[in-house]
Length: 380
Image 1 (cartoon, rainbow, N blue to C red):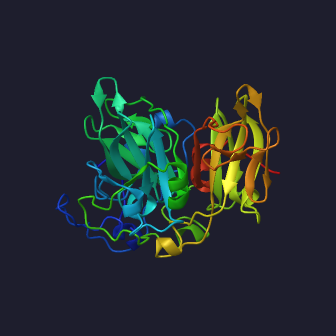
Image 2 (cartoon, rainbow, N blue to C red):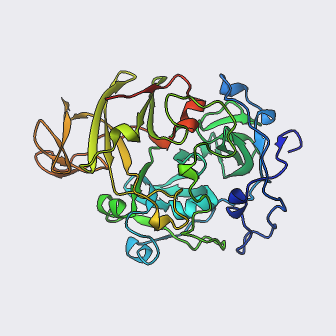
Image 3 (cartoon, one colour):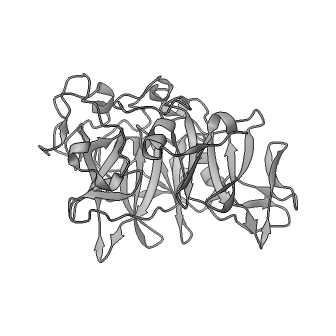
């Protein structure tokens, strides 16, 4: 890694997230005192031209260890340590629904898993507050991903252990190595509260704390990160149309990118909807309160309520629907059916139907706009 930009030191916040422990990690934590990290670059206009020299080296590879043999438990067992409003990343493939609690993902960032028979990588970048998943099969290879120890505009950079190619978290794009230029497809992931997950997927499973590592699960190593004026480790230009740490729902379809600010979506009714057309598709954005920030209070279960989102195509049975909030519930105006945050009918004429999920990302504005500078901002 000698060609990477070297960090003289790293903040104690990040060091706490890679503390040694557990029976699968014998390497001691880097002996680095809190100090400023060498600034990363302003986002490149062509991400395919990035190389190691464009990254910011913070830690050695796998200092933040991935979970490669994940174990899962029933939600009723997870109740012992996971509170109702804590955030989880939710992935469902072929009826196999799994929740990956942020209180675990914050400490590991990558889970190499097999869901519904599909090898997947489920990832979470705390510095960007972004959860993404991709299939791990590339050609005839099943890749296993780890943290490279480097960042690009403060975002996670992964590597695969089979070819040591480097991959951008936000793009699923290999920027260096034998697989350079390969782009992974995104698998839709939704951030929900633990309680919302249980309602949406009563037969689902929850990632266990039995990870093979000793970590302070439930503790937030990035306390009050999301109330700072500017994210540490990011020294690029901030698009001043929104505050750097503003939460947004980001959608990109056919190279058209739109950001839906939480500040616009949030409502005293506890729910809201936004209709839009992106890349030629008619979509609806659902927002609902009841999900706590994992990057606020030192105890994640005490984080403030920031809510979360779902994004869907609006057509069901060939009929284009419009939605409204009525009595705190999301209903369609055509039939009065009540819809969940996960796009499922809870009651009404469309019983048993589901809206088609649209890949989206709940993240911070600085992170999204640095990758997608031409993003439009949705305004009511």
